[in-house]
Image (tube, rainbow, N blue to C red; front, side, top):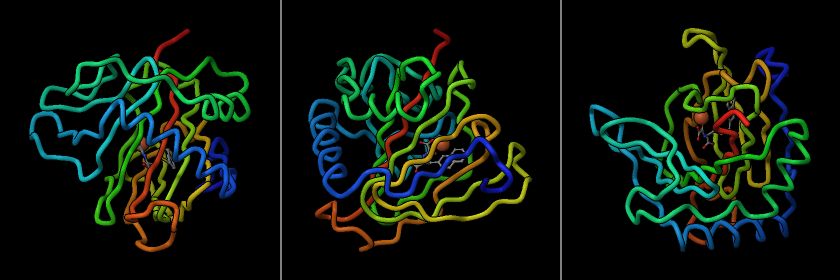
Length: 203
Ligand code: MD3
Ligand code: FE
C-alpha cells in the first residue's frame, strides 16, 4: 500500500517482453487510425507536453473550452477505434466487478515531457478503477493523497508495469515528474507510452 492507499495495486512486469511488443503493435494500429494530437489547457490554451490519442466508445480530450470525454477524434472527427482485445482481457482480470471500460487514453511522452500533479475526475463513475499500463522508457511518477497538500512519494514505472487505481487511490493526486531516457529498447526512438483504461459513465 503506497502512501497508505490500500486501493492502489502495483503489478510490476505484468506484461513480458513479447506481450509488450504485441501491445505496442495494437497501439500503433490505433494511432494509425486516430493520430496523436496535442491537447491544450482550458482557458489558457497552454499546450500539454504529452501527446494523446484514445480508443473505445469515448475518448478524453482537452481544448481551450474544457476537459471532456467525446466519441470522436478532435481533429479527424472520426469515432475512436475499438479497445484492443488484450486490454479488455487485462481489465477483466484486474477489475472483474467493474462494468466494461469505455475509454482507453493513450499518452505519449517525449523524453522531456511531464504531467503535473492532478486528480482524474472527469469520469462520472469513481467506483470503477483506472487501470494503467506503461510501455517504453521508465518514468518517475509521484503519488499523494486525496488533498493537493497531502505529502507525496515518488516511484518508478517501467515497461510492462500495470497499476490499478481503485478505492481510496482512485482520487489520489498523481503526476509524472520525468522520463528516464534510454531505459527501454521497446520504442525505437525512445519515449514512453501510458495507456489508461477507464469507465466513464454509470452502466
Ligand atoms: C492515479 N497518466 O492520463 S497513470 C492520466 O503515466 C495520467 O501517463 C499518468 O495520470 C501516466 O491521467 C499516470 C498511472 C498512475 C499511477 C499512480 C496513480 C495513476 C494514478 C496514483 C493515484 C491515482
Ligand atoms: Fe491521471
